[in-house]
Image (cartoon, rainbow, N blue to C red):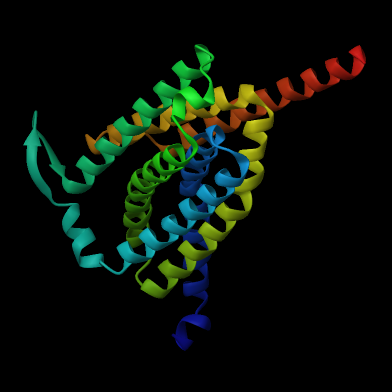
Length: 241
């Protein structure tokens, strides 16, 4: 452990892996921001805290099961000549869940359904949100940790990178969630991101890798356009006043 603290290679691996984990955590933050937008603010804060705590716990538990995780990448059967592992099946299931959830939310926004109609009660709505967060945390955690295993050899470095990344996710998730609530048009944009991410997960599951750089560039470009839309809308309101 002491040797890791004085090793330049270990610090370089930590910085690289932390940056990668933060980028991979963007998906998690977007999902959290959208999913908690339909419950009361006090419950939304609790759900966000529980969701990110579970993200950290799942990642550390999965890191502790390295041998089992490596086994998950071995093909268990083939479909149309493509060998699928348990990891692939989890990614496909998680991607389909994201697509279905985002499509459902987009339909609710288009039809202007009330929050009460969507959730069916405060306590039940809160538990439903937590259940959905658990499902998607497992999917994102699996993808994140398998990436970490390929990037570093020391479990201490992996755990440190995961803890730092989740801490940054926690700090950033609050402002992101408030921005989504205060600017309803950004919620539709976030839902579109979730559909895109879901498609990428399903593609990964079928061994068709879509470079994440393309996806994150598309997200950054769309966020930039939406930022100028929000700014223009705010300036128009000022002129009217």
